[in-house]
Image 1: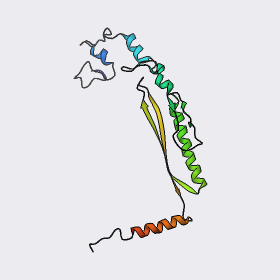
Image 2: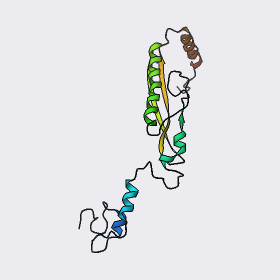
Image 3: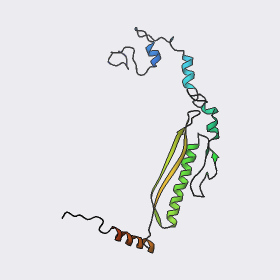
Image 4: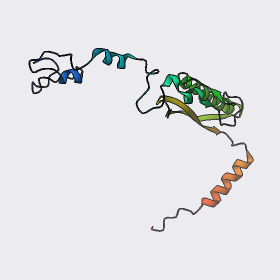
Length: 179
């Protein structure tokens, strides 16, 4: 019994071997390479994935017009962040640039909170990915930043009035009739 065989039940099975050559192994245990052309196997697996056309796709990632023409644009109302006008980013660097852009939104939230005596309770960034329909490449398609800021408004007379109105509105709303 050799290392990799399962209890000797399957003498030709080895989890660490190529399944094509393992099935072509004769009963005496010698390896036959006639079933597989080694040059085809190495060409297919060692080629650059950006130059190989995936099955069912129109082009390879290297020749993809959709990826070459993809543009990114910010949809927020903040004027001091990047990508206010549509710009192209290469698929390889899109992840880093989108994360940096979303980081600008987080930085703006902390600045806004500091200016108005507030506190950032939560700042989260979600990065979205998609798959190109033309070449099948996975790419970063955008991101969203959610921030929650709490301001101390105890000095504000409008806040005090609102709290008094809320208190009057909710008095008696929860009554336990069973005593």
